[in-house]
Image (cartoon, rainbow, N blue to C red; front, side, top):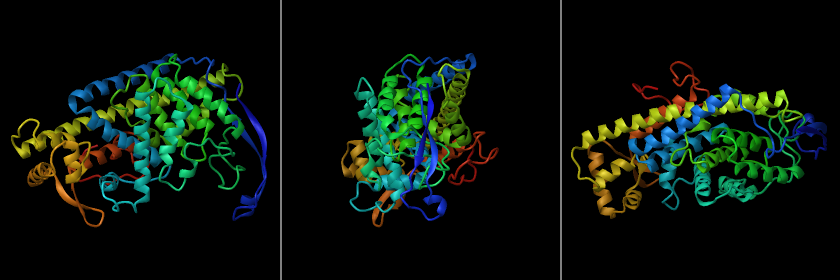
Length: 428
């Protein structure tokens, strides 16, 4: 049975205003454990979940024939990680992010862009989540701690990475007290037991995979077990569940981009999930179904837009090959044409590494693609050269804009968050 705990906040004197420095009574929410709870999905919600799972499976099957699965998975993983950051206020457009990623091979360049580095930390954390799903039979508390530690590594909050909170936190209101908070998670002493229950549920396959991912995400955000980075870790758990259940072995659609677009509905869905009282009550079941229906719909929408992106990339690759002319199969140029959608900004050294060819062979392949107009030379950092495939970055931008619009087209409904400008002539 879920309930509220009445607590009193004792001010430490911090804060600029009198209101910030005040003490107050507040209520912390303690959710029902997940294990042993009955989850009943309404007929239409169960159908939405089934549709979402079918769409995700189809995306994964088609990805292996349309575009190399590792390539499309990488670009969608980056998109999803950027989305997770955008929900929490970090902004880095595709070109800026890709340039910093390309600069990683240089010792000094790109490190001043703190925001892009933090977003790249999201990419690493997402990759860690998928690796954990592949490498372990069960999800454990340590799995979640490792993901969180990876998320915060290299940021000012790295000291909190992988550590369950020992203090009360809250969402909204003042930075100094929970007096006006929109939501106050459970007291810190209750968090360890709730995390153990959460991971037990992560390893229970009683619910359909999409419904399980929805419940795990909502419960994690409800518990809010870390000082910071809860949102991004909670969205990485979506990947973890869908990968573990086998419906997304190659590609997890960028659900977070849709959740970011429907942020009001997202918060309302999480709030509805947090019922008070008996888990079998009408209120609890209604809240559960409202949240799962929203989550399933976001999955289906993410798949639809991901399919459009894949089709766009395939057309770009066809156009590239027409520009370049005949090339020998498995040559450096042929392989690089397949790799560019996943690495649209690349250095000669990086190309040599991923191609498994010499620096000279990679340099010649890049020169040929540059001459054909597939690539153009840019600067990375202060002195280093890189090469950009602008068509891919433009397609990436169209995907971001498409997913930022409630109607899937920013010409019909305005984007719900800052997005890169649309290039003249691009459709959405």
